[in-house]
Length: 167
Image (cartoon, rainbow, N blue to C red; front, top):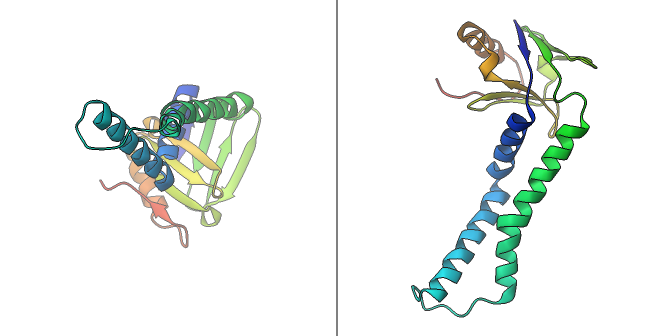
């Protein structure tokens, strides 16, 4: 099966933001932000009998709601802009044994039984080479037949964690 695709900067940012805020520690940080918002609004609108918020609580809330998302955005943007490979037109060939990815400036091939893990998202297929690096394939470029063939191939890979969406 051959898939031709190209990932835009916007798509990449959206994917990475989703992956970042999916992590348990990020969810915990967001819970802290919500708790701070409830505390501060509860104090000023007299919803709850809470003590007056201290300045460090306002600073923490600003960091969680403004500084952190901006830093994540800038890191993702800088990563995309500095990579010559991320924005290239890709041709991905996948069969039972291996995946081959050819861009304008690179070529790579890898045996499927040696990948770290495979994760299907709503709009993406991520084939991880290691804990941090993945081949990103947008599902919009699959035909329905290719999607079914791909699912069949992925479910037969031995000793690789494959997380596919339920159909």
